[in-house]
Image (cartoon, rainbow, N blue to C red; front, side):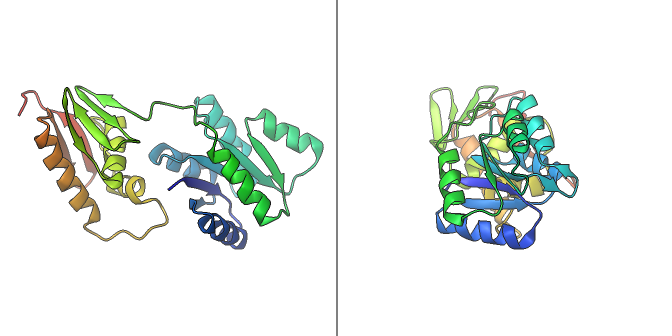
Length: 228
């Protein structure tokens, strides 16, 4: 399922937008602050962002400029009550793909969101490699040389975050968010089950890597000195 990040601090409006997007088969996470939205984009593979300008910690265009400066071409629809010509020009100049002034018709917003999802996301590779491991995210396949193993969508997202941050400790909450999103309730042992399955699959393809539990901090993907 496509997943959009909605950066909107107005709770009632955010609920209405979420209801509309979910009804159209689009998953959505809601965040109301710029820094938290930036952190979420680093953790989760969103296909688009819907961005309000009037946020508690500043103009939403701050986040948009930060994304574009970092080379992240995540498609962006700006929703705002600022509908003057110079406001729209400012948003587009900051890197917005579309601009919809408030108030708006929900059907139009959904149609514009779907249009965003048809655009390619130009950013870092979605198929990371680490050592002799390569992850094909869309196919859900982990490769080592000529050996491969299938991963579930949840396992693929966990492995994606670990590979992008290889040798670094990734917090448990970040892995849960990557696998299940920010809106879904996660059972206490769901991540443990996913990690157990990934570890077994790494052994299956003879990988020289292991997922290490750094007690009290999180997990890290590291390469062994000797192949198993």
